[in-house]
Amino acid sequence: MNLYIYGLETDFSQAQKELLESKFAYVNFITEANYDLAMQDNEPKVLALDPDITGWSLPNEIIARIPNLKAICLQTTGYEWVDGDYCRECSIAVTNVPHYASVSVAEKCVFMALALAKRFPLYLREGGMSYAPEFIGDEMWDKPTDIIGFGEIGHALAKRLEGLVGNKEICYYSRNQNDPDFHYWPFEGMLEKSEFMFVTVSKNPESIALFDDLSKFNKNLKVIIVSNGFEEVAQRLVEKCEVGELGGVAFESDDPEILHREYKTNIFVTPHNAHCSKEALARMFEIWVDSMAAVADGKIINQVN
Image (cartoon, rainbow, N blue to C red):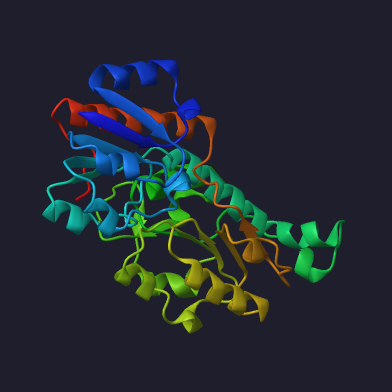
């Protein structure tokens, strides 16, 4: 079985490269989204995809032209950028890299919340101290705080917020209502009372629909978004914040126009780097390499289709 890694060889440790070379007859590192070599190879094969190389895309028409493809190992937790249903129909496994960045993302959430609480975006733009009312921040302690989505990231975030706001103030909204340490609360009930809301839920029609009616969001609410796919929601929240109908918005974007725009009020936009810590990236490569090696061993781990 052959392995085509669309990624940088220098990103892998020597031990990881030696492991893969021991599992596969042929290991090839490719640094552009060119699938010609894989298309010309009739041997059983695995594609391992870094989205920075492949452009967050692997069209079905490309997949159809690669013979004897057994698995596609994605370097990301999200897997919506490859058609898993189509791959399943073609007997191609798709794997992802789960849970590697829960701690890093949770810590980024806390940082963004503190930035909004202390009106940090206004100070950055002003470049100095001010006692004007719009610059006076809030303490987070004892403030109603809600988390939308209570998977690995949501739970890691709740644990880190306990010391900032107090356990009794932390509520969550999720399909799973059985967490014994924190309080489940209906989403509609959060909108009137919440002062900090963290969006960590996966994108789907149901989660996006939660934000259809922004008129119910109270004007003191500060919303922190780290979920992928909520760009349109974030922009609508920005509009609401800029007319004084929301307390603040923090989110990530890789769009230069959005990143460098001069916002009028308590709006904090950072690059999409919540997952990016030394520890998280090390875990990511470890899980990714394990997923590749498992296919060679006749096992599939972290399959998502």
